[in-house]
Length: 448
Image 1 (cartoon, rainbow, N blue to C red):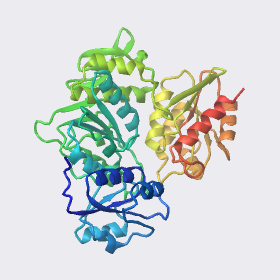
Image 2 (tube, rainbow, N blue to C red):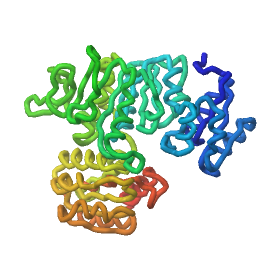
Image 3 (cartoon, rainbow, N blue to C red):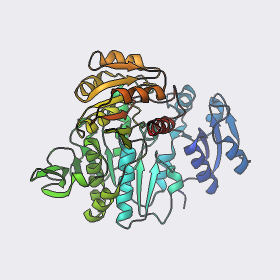
Image 4 (spheres, rainbow, N blue to C red):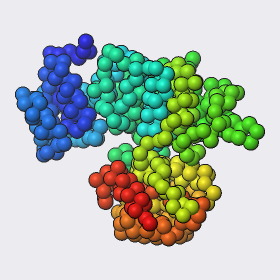
């Protein structure tokens, strides 16, 4: 049963992955709609014309008069709401919405909603595996993997959703069973006026939530809470009431809930303090929706992490190589530098650089000084990073990823780790962060 009034006209703005999921959803429910995209040849255009030849599609500059024919625009997360044509339509009374708003209106099972500057995908995947281990019929997606609307099914018992700030901008009321913002650090400053605007977008995830999870080590993750709202926390310190954290027993570190030790940290396959925090966040979210500890801990023991997220590549001559290409912002790189740096005997040799998206790199300086032997810099914004790092460690500039790998081989000593954690997007040199990570892993594996 659709919750859309079918006599109204809608326009899907943006024909990427989420746009195509909107097309399928609206077409299946007999809703009258059209499609617009700012690009002359958007990624899903051929699919749309093949499968839905009757749908009116307009490519190129957005036509305000055309947009104003709609009651509601479903705007792609890739298109800024500040786009003048969208603002003009909104000023004339057209509602701006998105796929997540539509998903929330139609989802019949509880939603675990996860956002944050970093670690969203790891925690989302982990909660999904915990739910599956507990025997739940779980659907996992959103900003990760399958678009939200493609997950809708009467068979699903629990939705676990990764949500970006861009998706949340067009979501008026999510109504999640439990929601979290894992961490907040500067990202997408090319799209937001500053950190406060980005922070506000993230916190839309808490609208209508029945429970919240926050990070005790990041005050920006804690929402303003109404009286009596069930609230859980996670952090790397010793946990208190309703908290998940770390306890020490007989010289060994344990994941813990309140005053109870759950499992030794050494049993985790994922490395680094940041991944311990991810495990604790997943436990807090799973506990909030009633997943039993035995199933959650079983999932934690087998979870090997995600590709391109502090992923072990190989060991060579006493040096471990890690692919953290997904670290496309400063906060993600800091998590890897500090998390992995605390977990190895030696020092890190870091590869950084790319498209900085307008970020300030100054926060890298102290953690790099404390954890790194050297930094190998590449890409468009390498000089901005070099300025921020100053004389913290030796800096080596290179023109290619292959050259970066060769330099790391020469710089690293036994007990060290080489870490690709660029703190930048990849688009100045690569198709995407996946390609960057794959080429790094291949170059590292090819070392004799």
